[in-house]
Image 1: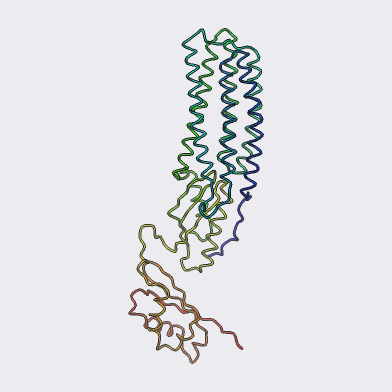
Image 2: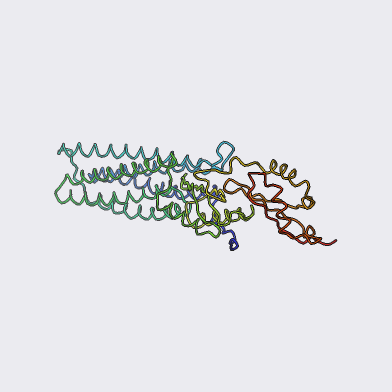
Length: 397
């Protein structure tokens, strides 16, 4: 078996305080822009007589409310793990996203209700002016720029709530494009187009809210990653030198982070504990490095497949077995020189590796004969399948 590669270092580590500072900075920049857009859209929609622009202003107001939720959630979710919350406070962000999603559904429903009411009451339809087009165009450009600014930080911090906020910004830009078409249609002599555009914007707002609620609720109940992502994780693990197979692969998500639990089987089941640990660390490091959202991996080493059966459960512990072995070998002189006993629990049996000095073979005794002597002494022990002897040259003093 080839030697294991060195442990791969994970990608850029970002501490919780740095995450909070960047999240707060990005969100505050968005909040300043949203305050300005809310003012010009609501007042502009009022004076330019555009119901769609007013609806878009309420959309921007929901963006501002979103930013407040993000700031509150970020402050609490980025606190370090403590005794009561050993996995951290990331679920605060998830719950906040659910609340945000419900609020968007309510906002979208209210806008749609008002627009439908105006459609069935023609005298309430508005006639928008040119300023509605100008304000909507400015909103498209500014919110698209804010989307790119926010999404960069979301990807770097691996933050779902920032990613959701970024797409909220882009949805505002898209809704403003709808406003442009609505206002243009109304100015062309079709006053109902503006109300229809408002309904479309409302539908977009509600859709975003439903998506937030759905994705965050799935996270709260520890829904695993999709099949494609799990297959990628599986391929990454089996590519590690020393790993022959894996099972019991489980994933879950929390506030943009992915946690992985896996049992791996080794090509050589009799390797040392330290080498098995080394292989598990390589698996952990490679997953964290190659898959952006993975932040923690728990690896269980299996010398054989124990997913469906545990044949070694009834076997004696090391302490009990050594006492029995001492009784079996009490008449063998070489037993007093045993330096180490390695136990291999495999397929419902115990395989013994004994380490002895070469001096045990003085007097013409062969290693095969001594091995047979030890094996015969434990032949009545049903739990023991094999005895192997390994000799070393003791240092001369």
